[in-house]
Length: 246
Image 1 (cartoon, rainbow, N blue to C red):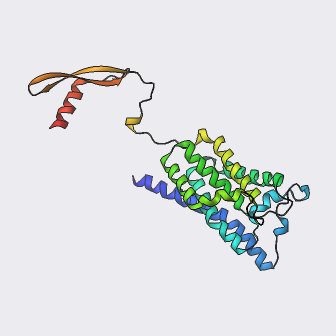
Image 2 (image 1 turned 120 degrees about the vertical axis):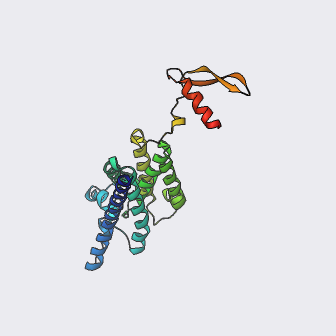
């Protein structure tokens, strides 16, 4: 038990560290801008411009100001941490795919203006974690999904062109990228733990087995249903029942 607790604490610590590192990167870029009194926003993503195709990579690291950066920090940290903790086995593939697909699709459909910010990646992570929880039917992941909806329930409105200064194209691209990756990895998602009473499948064949029991001085025959290929010891069943009755 202590060993399992130690392993779990280690996994949580690793996930927090990964979330911190991934969130720190845009802060380092912003700090570099402030120290040198410059702005790197012009190096963001410019849709359908082959000269700024690199914007697919640079967009998540650039922000228009401290408020813009702060608004993305908490969700980016939380979602990256969750993604690593629950999906460690394919964390890299999911994160990289969302990152690249968000940038590429924004480059394809975006307005001819500079797009910056990590919000597209945030939308992608949100969609992946939410839909993965739904596909897997894992109670822990389902709880995370509900938490995501509760914390970022209004996030859905960001994929529509409601604010002219907001890159809804980036949000939409990220959301779709997260959904696509959740479908792609749905067969590899952590499976929900099944208890003994859930193990019997719907197509299992059952047989009716008679069991004689003494009730008020009279022998009464009752029946129990067991899987067809399962061998049971009726004497053990009777002893167990008597022990429970006492």
